[in-house]
Image 1 (cartoon, rainbow, N blue to C red):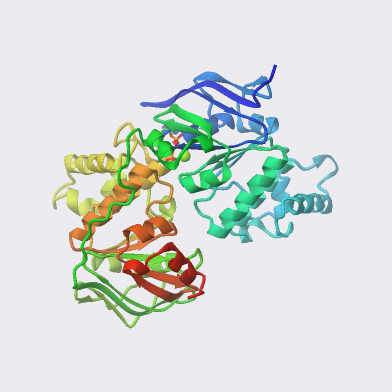
Image 2 (tube, rainbow, N blue to C red):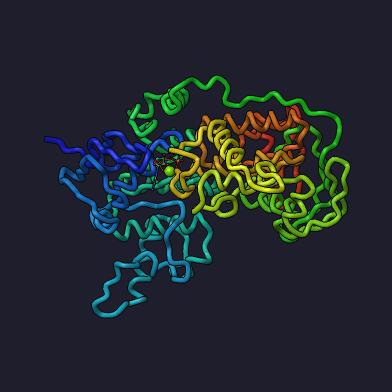
Length: 495
Ligand SMILES: Nc1ncnc2c1ncn2[C@@H]1O[C@H](COP(=O)(O)OP(=O)(O)OP(=O)(O)O)[C@@H](O)[C@H]1O
Ligand SMILES: [Mg+2]
């Protein structure tokens, strides 16, 4: 009898007020790459937390190579060969690469033989084609290199299954390609990979099969060649999305926002540009081009210099901190939302109330009713999955946390709105909502700076696109000039 390599059978998991998984059966073969997709809160992370021993299911069984397993802790799962590479990588920053790779696995008996571990690590890294010095401190590596160390570590533990939960969200296009190469190599070694991503093009590139979850239920599965993009989206969302990139704003002639010779020392040099009322002004460029720093600089969160800065005719003299920016009607929806945008230990309603205190209170007291209404309208608008607005933000799924951040800032209705990677990690339905918001805000006469690494959305939504390369503007495209090809040329400095 043939046995399925991995069989998770009838998995059910509830959290207070939430049925996170409803008797889901998940199967995978040896050496297979399986994409796990679904909207925010569909249950993807919960399923892999059960596979990796972080959570125990209320009901259901796990079989690995035909043997029933009961993972009572992550250690049990690791010993059985299941490794998870989380987005917040759990590596020891102050230890060298080789110590991380063998952390918890060193042959302790005779004391640690450093040169031996270093040599073994070197072999693993070489085999994977990673160009990393085993002796370097992990804290000195970038996100992509840390990910590679985590993969090397999984292999040092003889992982049979490697789970990657949104591994590409913070990688450059080049690094994503490299990760895909590595996934192909892992496959050849017979390692099975579970791959979670909100980017469907990636799934089609790297995965053999797909499993689609919606509201904790499995609503589809099969070989990727049997699915189209639209099939997957329809199954994920449970309805047809007519228009993925709605665009209905109409820019006016008046300039709303102007900077002259704006600099963020070391990152952005002498940029001059204007954004009109009602305009969606795209900012594109490869990772490292300075677009993130431009956003932080304009918001006063990074040191900047400029000859002129003007918002709706008001001259901005000093920009020493975000308070100056906020006072002048400029807001940034930050890229690193978990770090800069949320208080994880507070509820949804408290998080949304924070930047909107002036809206929900009068001089005497804070209106709990107004606060709740505001939070509830954000929950409706962005389809934030939460049993109630009083749920703590740390209990929401990753994507739903991001929706809370976007909601809380958008309600401020400032004059100039900078959105940095606003759709990163959020599902298709919410993406369309964010695009609608951008159009609506623009039509209220706001100026929108739309910074994004996802070219399709930049191309579809922007009225003009400024392309950066090494901190300098290499193109300012409008109309028919706005194509992925032109942006890429300018972004790589060819144009
Ligand atoms: N520790 C927890 N306590 C309470 N509820 C939780 C907890 N962990 C997850 N949930 C809830 O379970 C549901 C599934 O969450 P899960 O994190 O699995 O979603 P996901 O598919 O990974 O979404 P995303 O794409 O946003 O990361 C969500 O409604 C979430 O709020
Ligand atoms: Mg998740």
